[in-house]
Length: 122
Image 1: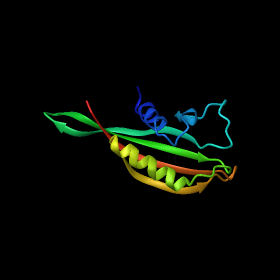
Image 2 (image 1 turned 30 degrees about the vertical axis):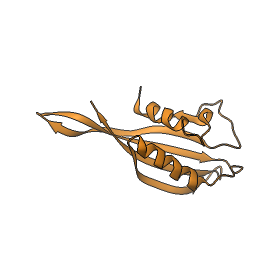
Image 3 (image 1 turned 30 degrees about the horizontal axis):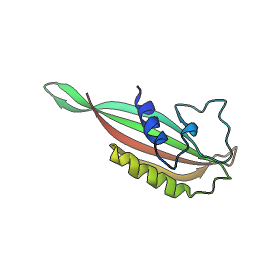
Image 4 (image 1 turned 120 degrees about the horizontal axis):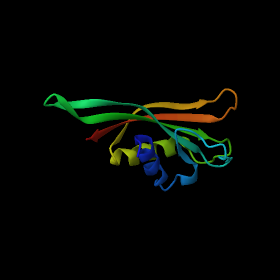
């Protein structure tokens, strides 16, 4: 299973997240919601991070979570993202960057991008 799919499964298990709207890599053409955020998980990179005996035994994965928020969503997106970051930290995903809330120019929809580090032992 890819790192993005592993993280997608963890996010789908968060109680305040609608699992039907969490995807890895892209939003399917069949995805249509006006009331729930759409979450897309993708991979930034994976690089060796710990070496021993001239070989590496740990990989640092960097993953990105984009949250597209519809205008009709009434829950605080800040509360949702912080809750998500806290739960993912328990599972070894450490938030290293957050864009805050931005707007997509052509749709006006809110977008939040979170970036996480994750150490994976081989």
